Amino acid sequence: MKILFHPKSHDGKEIHSDAERERAIAQVAFFRAALDKLRGKKHKRSNAKVVAKCETMLLEREAQIRDYDDLKNGNLKLPKLKRVDDIVAFITRIRIARGVSQAELARRLNVSKQVISRYEESGYQTVGLARLQQILDALEARIEIDFASSSST
Image (cartoon, rainbow, N blue to C red; front, side, top):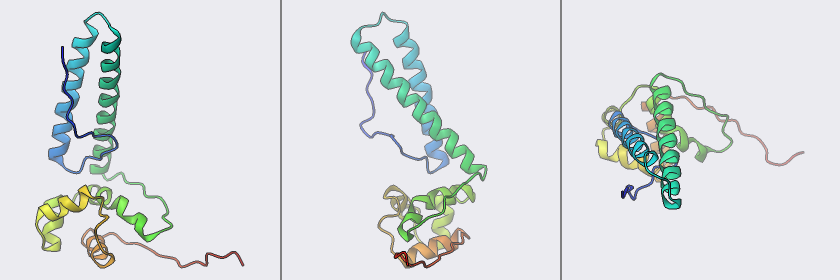
């Protein structure tokens, strides 16, 4: 039996929308079915490697679904950040926890949903500081910045 994996890995990839969550659920069902078939066969060395890979991918996707569901329920814990550019890593999580879809954020910013999708795919790394503030304002997210000396005097 051959199992083909999608070339685009989901390692560490967050789920950004309900549609992505549904695709992840379908992937979990696929991995479970594949594992059931593989476990029913006599294990060859190559089968053991495929089983291990399927198990890893299954656990990963299940964790991503749980994380998305937690965010959708408003469970968001943000660490104290030390740099302004660290904020971008949390924008998608803030959006989801606030119950704002990509389409709604796009409407609030007067851009297309595709623009928001591109921002999120790039981890907001291409967004300038002024645009970042507009996004945070649209999400009603408040940030506090403390200026501190980097020297220890």
